[in-house]
Length: 118
Image 1 (spheres, rainbow, N blue to C red):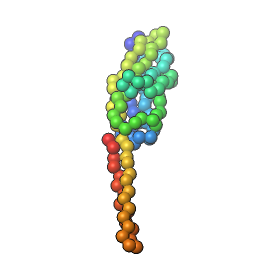
Image 2 (cartoon, one colour):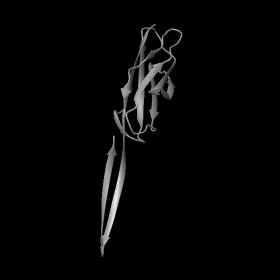
Image 3 (tube, one colour):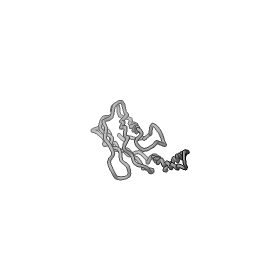
Image 4 (cartoon, rainbow, N blue to C red):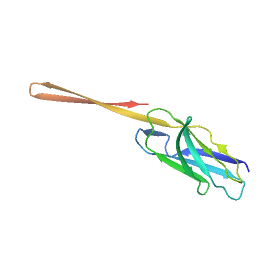
């Protein structure tokens, strides 16, 4: 049977180090569907999980700053053919913090700057 794989993300924009959960929903006209889904950032495998109730899910907190293009590929089983989701562009941002302290006599002033990386 033919299948369809749809990929979603728990958030579209996340700060580096934050958790992002990717869920692949695999549908088929067959009475049951089993197997694994492999998740990719471009051509690099970033995780794999078994289907449960038609869903497969991974949670990552190791994506680096940028816009990874994530996809999910269902491996198929004895009744169902493989399928691949479309690309999901995930925005991962980061931040840097700078501080400058100046002292003149008895007075000290500190300026703190946060820079958002996208």
